[in-house]
Length: 236
Image 1 (cartoon, one colour):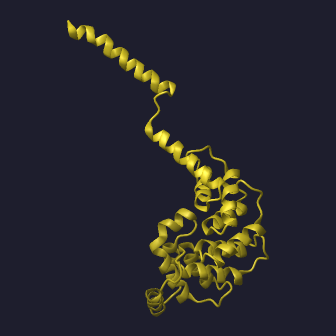
Image 2 (cartoon, helix red, strand yellow):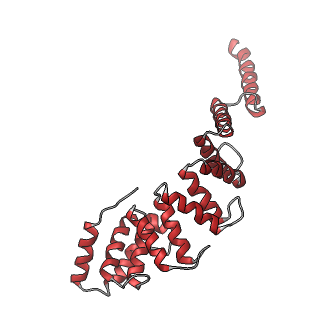
Image 3 (cartoon, one colour):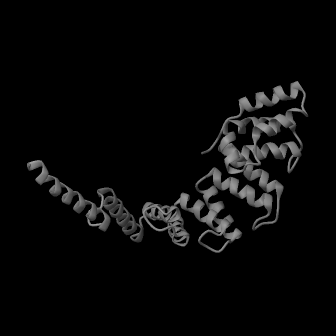
């Protein structure tokens, strides 16, 4: 009998808890903690904390804890960049290049890429400058400048830059045609093959090297392999 009496009471309690969840009066601790963290980040950003500004910009860019807003993302990246944050310089440059949250401006993008490269020594900035010169975005197209920036990026380990250097040596763009050097750079890019293909499906260092090998003799291939083994990454 007691069980029959308690059953309706238990059901009412369960319904009441469900109502609280639905109405939002019984929010999870995780949501509250997340909101508190975002409030602290925003307060820090507004007070001038560079790390908080970068974190807030990332949140707006990815829609993490806030509604996605590329204009606000750019605004906070720019504030952090102007205070010397190199990650933010790179982010500002990319957004200017692509017109994300701001009017597209190749010349301003180049300015920020150069700062990120010169002061922060970032391989991504070097590679981006290589792309700008290769395609003539904001500058006069210049394969020699493109090659130099790709070489700087590759020296710091940038995977796509390695692949593109292989292509420039194979085709003789900005440098004397050198199949052995091309083989070297394709070989160095192969360990990053999946990442490179994800960035650009047209870039496949394994396929490029296989096709190149058809133009080479065994002696040349052997020299290419030895050059790749002797290569050492520099910078960050």
